[in-house]
Structure formats: C-alpha cells, structure tokens
Image 1 (tube, rainbow, N blue to C red):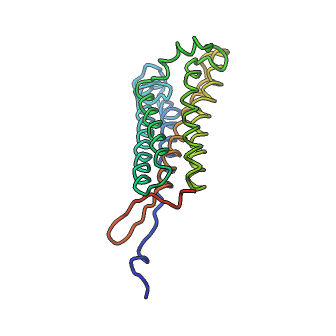
Image 2 (image 1 turned 120 degrees about the vertical axis):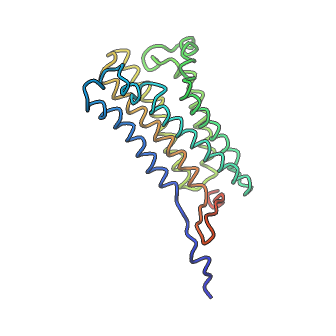
Length: 242
C-alpha cells in the first residue's frame, strides 16, 4: 500500500531563494548608487540627501544597513545549523558556530567600522603605501586567516554541495574585502579619487556582499526542510556530513 504521507512530503530548497534574493538586493544597491542619482542633477552632489543615503562608499545609510542585515542573517542561520547539528550529534556543530561568530563580527564591524580603527596599528606594522595603503589590511589578515580556517575545516565535514557554497562564498568575500580593497587603494594612492577608484570600490562592496549571501546559503543547504501535510519540519541534514 502506498504511504500517503510520503507522497505529500516535499523537500524544499530555501538556499536557492537566499541566493536569488541576495543577488537581487546587491543589484538594487548598485542600481541606487549608479542610476538613481542620475535622474536629477542635484542628486549627484556629494552633500545631497539622496547621495548620502545611497552611496555605497559612505557609512550609516541604506547600503550599510543591507550589509549589516546580510551578515546578521548569515550569523543567525549558521547558529541554527550549529544547534541542529548538535542535536544530530554531527561533528560540524562547533565549526558552524565558529562561522556564525565570524559573521556576527563582520556585521558589527560594518556597523561601527572597527577595521578602520586598526589603521594606526597597521601603519606600525609597516603598512600605509602600495597594496597596504589601507593599513588596516595588515591586522585584518588575521581575520581572513580565521575565516579561511573555519571554512576549510567545516567544508571537510559537509557534503560537496555545502562545501562548494562555503568555498565560493569565502572566496568572493575575501577577493572583494581584501583583494580588490588592496588593489583599489593602491590605485587611489597613485591616481587619486576618481572614476577608476569608484569602480574598484563598487566591485569590492558587491563581491563582499554576495560572498556573505552565499555563506548564508551554505548554512541553509546544510539543513533539511521538508513540507508535509502538517507543516514544515527543519533538521540538520546528516547526509551533508562526510
């Protein structure tokens, strides 16, 4: 006899919605930065309210809120993955929690700009010109090392699908926040503030945001969402372990 419960059960894949929604949010932020201000000449003024609200190079505005929200969403999802992995006695539980802590730290940094406060330390360590024109990149390398370690170790304890999202997300984030940041600031030192530097800045911010989105999607991919007659159940996908 056919089990009607199994027939009505359906596996959901919210990680796909997360990637699509996150990509849409990043594109919307770029649209606001590049297009909206062109609709009226007055909005191009750096001191205009619209410019201050939408400029991705500024702080305490809509792009900052988006970045903080994405990292907080990632931290929350990764913490849930850690909790459900613990219930399932899965060896990835501690590493999901570590990733959640890193994501939370990134959200706090975006909100209060902690990394810029380490610029003086970076200069004492030899930064301040060339690829380290933004001297905070030197002490910031320690954070990058922590992220790489967590992602590599966690990836070894998950399925190929989850591992790939972890690696892609971390790569996009690090290429944007460290790679393009270094190149863009070296360009700024030589050529000054202009269109070229702004292009580096937009690419950097976009990659950083989308990388955080993919890291959030990796946590969703590690969970099993099953819709059935009585609702949706969520559990850690033990098949995601090696």
